[in-house]
Amino acid sequence: MSAAEVAAVVAAGCSTVSVVVIAVVARTLRRQVRVLERTVAQLSESTVPLVADAHRVVGQAASELERVGVVLERTGSVAATVDSASRLAYRAFANPVVKVLAVGAGASGGVRQLRQRRADGVGRTPRGRGGR
Image 1 (cartoon, rainbow, N blue to C red):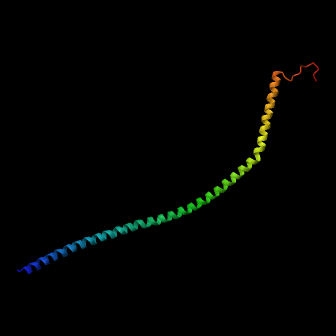
Image 2: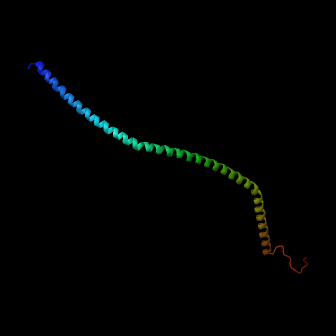
């Protein structure tokens, strides 16, 4: 065997080993691709309904937010009406109530003074001495 024949045999052996390694790698990659395809299919089966549910829930939340917005607007309107009514009631009743309280306080003070004078004997006229 000459050097050229030995080189050819070595090259053929290396080529054979390379082909076998490539075949094993290709087979392993093919299996991994199949596993990956199954995983993607399972993931798709489980996530598509979840995404659909999430979309539905987001739609419901948006409609609820619209309702809450309407309620808040109405609440603001009611609060403004109540505030206006309370201001009107305050203006309508404050002055007369203050006057009534003032009259009551004045009358109370007057009654107190009369009682005190009677208790002290001031302003009494003795009976039978030409009193009226």
